[in-house]
Image 1 (cartoon, one colour):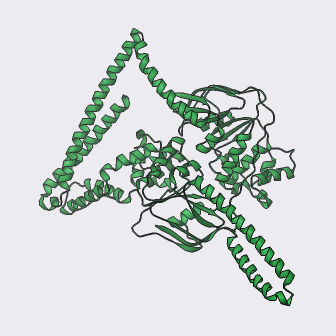
Image 2 (image 1 turned 90 degrees about the horizontal axis):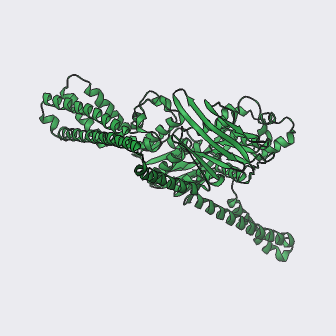
Image 3 (image 1 turned 90 degrees about the vertical axis):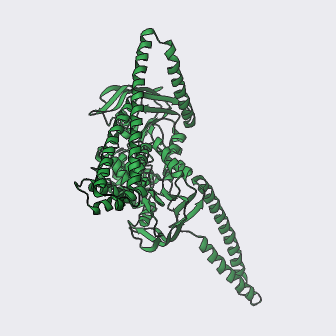
Length: 633
C-alpha cells in the first residue's frame, strides 16, 4: 500500500492541491486524470521522491520495489539496448557484471571460487538465465525487433529510447508501478501490446494518461485530481465520468434544496424576529440557518481545474472534387528508406487517418504534403481551390521566440482586429494577461492550443494534423474531435489516439514496407476488413501455385527446395543449441550444489568454469547460426 497524507503543493502562485489524502491499495490499477497543469506529473514525482511537497507525507511499506518511467536515457547512450533493459533488475545486473569480471581472471583462488558460487546463486535467484529472453520479448512487444537489441542505445531516435526505458522499468518487475503518459511515443500496435501487459500486471499501478481507451482497458479505479484535491472512483474511465456527473448533479440538487430552505427560514426571521411572541421561534430558526450554511459550505469546492476550449473550424469555400493526387512519393534519409512509391487520391470530404508503426514515414508524408519537406522522387498536386492548414508534431519549429501570444497570432492575418484575435484566443483558453505571455514560456498544451487558434483564424478547406492530441488534456482533445466531426472540409491526420481515430476518420491508409492498405468505413470496419483481406491474400497465394506456368512452377520448386534446406539448417542449429544448453544446465547443477566449492579441488573448479565459459561461447555462435538461418527462410 502507498499512501499520501495532507499533501499540499503549488506551482508558482497556483495551488495544485492542499491537505489532500490518497491511498493506493495492493493489486489495484489506478488511472490518474485531471486537466493539464493540475499536478498529475507533480504527484507522481512526489511519490517517487523526485520532489518534496510543501506539506504532508508519502508513506511506502518497507521491502517494496517502486518502478517509474525515467527520462534519463543519456546515462545509457553507449550501452547495448538489451543491456539497458537488463539494468532494470539492479541485483541481477550487478551479479552478471561481477561474474563477467571474475571470469576474466587468469587464476582462481579459493576466495574467487566462493565469490563465483555466491554470484551464481544470486543470478539463479533473479531468474538470470531466462532474463535475456524476457527482456527481448518486452522490446519486441514495444516494436523493436531482435535485430537491433545488440546495438547501442544512441542509434535509436528519442521516442524509441523512451520505449527502451519503458521496457527497463517493466523488466524490473516492481510491486508498485507509476507511469506518466507512457503511450506518448508508442504507435497503435505497441499501445495495444502495453494494454495487455499492464492489464495482467499483478501489482499496484498508478498511470497518468490522456488516452481514454487505454484507461478503460487497464484501470479498475480512477484518481481524479480536481478542485485542489484527490478523489478516487471505482471503475474504469467511462464509469468514472458517469459517476462523477451523477454526484455533481446530486450535489447541485442538494445545494438548491438547502438554499431554498435557508431563504425560507431567513424570511421567517426577518418577518417575525422583532415580535416578542415569535422571538423564541425566530431565534431557533436562526440557529437552523447557521447549521444549513455550515452544511452548504462543506459542499462547496475549490474551482475546477478542468476547462474546455470552444473550437469551431469553418472552410473558406469547397475545394474541387479531387482534393489531392499523390504519385510515386519516395523519401530516404541517407541509406534509410522511409517512403517508397506512395500513390493515392483524396476526394473532397475524405477524413483520412494515416496508420502504421512508428518510423514507417507517416509524419514525413504529412510534412511533404504540407510543403515543409521535399520528397526524393515522385510528386503530388493539390486540387482546384484547395487551401491547406497544417498542425505540426514538432511545435517548437513553428512557435518560438519572445513574441507575445497575441502578436504571434496577429502575424498570420494582419487584417483581423485585436478584439477578434482576443476572442479566438479566449476560445482556446488564453484570457486576460495570458495573451501577453511570450510564446517561448508556453507549456506543450498551451502551444498546441495556440496552433489550433491559428487554424481557426485562417479559414481553409483541407486541414492536416500530425499527432494533435499529444499535448492536449482529455477536455481539449474531446473538444477538438467534436469540432472536426462538424468540419465540412477534408482532413488528413496521424494519431495514435484510438478514440480520436475512431471518432473522426472515415478512411484509413495504412503504410507498410509492402506498400499501402487503403479502406473506407468506420475504424471497426477497417480492422475487420483488414484481417479479412490478409486472409484472402494468403489464400490467393496458396491457390496461385497450381496455376503457374512451367517455368514459374520450376522457379517456385527451386525456392521451396532452398527454403527446405534452410529449414533443415535452422532445425539442426536449434538442436545444437538445445544440446549445448543441456550441457550448461548439468554444469550449473553440479557447480550450484551446496558442497561443490568445499569438496572440489581448485584445479577442477577452474576446469569446469573454463568448460562452462567455452560452452557459453559455443552457444552464442550456435544461436547466431540459428537466428541467421531462421531470418533467411
